[in-house]
Image (cartoon, rainbow, N blue to C red; front, side, top):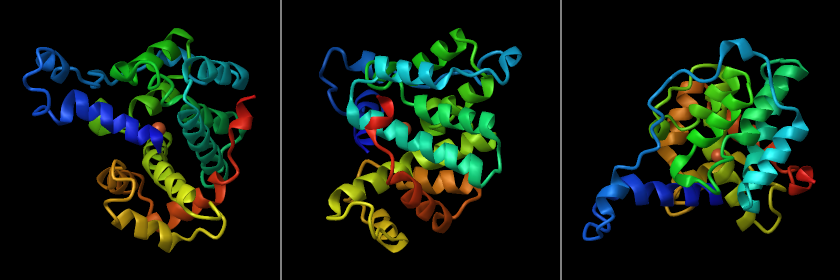
Length: 236
Ligand SMILES: [Fe+2]
């Protein structure tokens, strides 16, 4: 959630509110900054199937991401990706880890290099000879920002989980019992309240569900059920 607030704040600063700071001499420089990746090919097909170990991925996350809220967000999305791969796609352990790794590192460069998100992590994973499908999933997790279309199922689910996971976590923080007793109807009500987690893009949630072909009635209960158990202890 914090990610989203921070994410959109910075995007706004760079691109969405060009009317701001118009008298600032750095204004022109700022508004031409873009997160568009301007390419659609990532990694090397020769590296298909190659991943970091979980220890290597967590070491990278711990090294690059200092913000605990962002670390938790990435762990939550990673866990959702792993569980979806296992339970809904029937994938084996190796593929589950590919999905989990995409979730675990999808925002790895946001904390320190917001102006280079997600170019920086893509280049790092290419340097480390990571599976191009994992890199593509990361590159396409915000098609409206990075200009890369989600194509594979893994891509679409990362995009679908990203925003909604953040909104549901924000909702858990305002509830006395957190995730306990949280229901679909409560989340849907929050979704309709534009003032709640205002920086979470409802349009992107709708777009992501549509691309994935999944109803909110399926996705929301899945997130509630699986996200509650995730904690920062997993990084230790
Ligand atoms: Fe994210």
